[in-house]
Image (tube, rainbow, N blue to C red):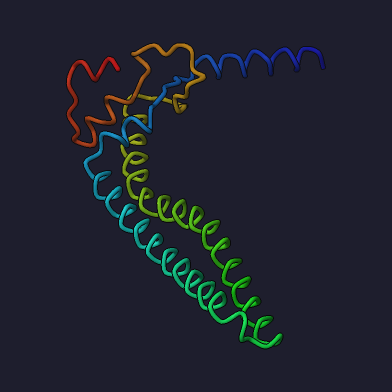
Length: 171
């Protein structure tokens, strides 16, 4: 039994040693893609529309509050209660809209970036297979060192038809 454990250990060790691991900076590639400008414009337009919708709600609230102030003295108790309820409901609606606005922007951003990530993924797949990589990790701020020979960022940019200057290659 002990022999079996040792054999499995050496087999797994040799399998790991034969793997080729690379890294990719997806955010850098994304920043260099010309399609990103159109995505940013689309998101900006969407954000402006959300702002317009929010401002309409705020204006409506201000109008209700102003009407309430002007007529408060002449309203019956029931009318006051009705107007206050309407204002509280609209205020809650505004708060909910603001909270949902950030989520809606995030969803819209994910939708808009999905085709770009797919292009990057397809190029990565092609490069990784051609160069026999078994694993590719995404570079992060936590990565302390990366041998440039195993950085697939530039080859993927080239695969996507994006040219960068030699200064940019060294990042």
